[in-house]
Amino acid sequence: MIDGLNSAALDRINGNGGNPKLTQNQSDELRESFLTMLVTQLQNQDPMDPMKNEEMTSQLAQINTVSGIEQLNDTLNGITQQMDAGKMLQASGLIGNAVLVPGNSVKVNVDDEGASHATPFGLELDTPAERVEISVRSKGGEVVYTEQVNNVSAGVQSFSWDGLNSDGEPLAPGDYRVSLKAFDADGEEMSAQSLNYAMVQGVTPANDDGDVRLDLGAIYGQVGIDQVKQIL
Image (cartoon, rainbow, N blue to C red):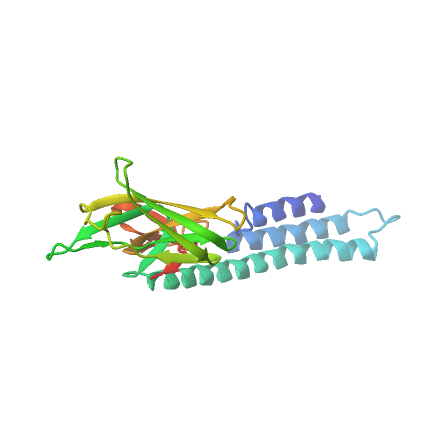
């Protein structure tokens, strides 16, 4: 019976994902139940076949196991809370900063003097590329600008664009889409992830999974802090 109670207790303590499921009173009651059952077992044992010292030790070890697991879970829970607080502090430091996150959006603005400006964009490569072909399209899908960049290193690379079309004329303000294709020395297309510019406007506290979210505004929504590829 003690073995069965011990198994049930371990299940309740461990729960899902190792989070503590017992209150202090529940934990004390379980330990008291263990001891009560052990004493009852000793009182009602067969005098001709008494409990062996090894069995007694095993039963006591089970009680200590439950207590030890509970203390370990409490310790892990405290460490998790500290890690979540650290993530939140780290994320808060990004508020007001520009970042590159996965996406293919680029925005063109025109200043008071009529000059065009575009937000930066980026590319993430696992290995170096012999060349990268850049194409910018309007919302309607029309290609308005193309460029080729050679010998691009692996990792995250950022690019700037002046918001002019291929003929050097200013483009209308608005949202555009950038397409990036990377090729190796043999001319084979490589895996590449496009990145777009966004401003961090706020931070959402960690959820049950410990995931801190960055608020990038109405257009880009929220992303995990692990999605930030570069801080500009």
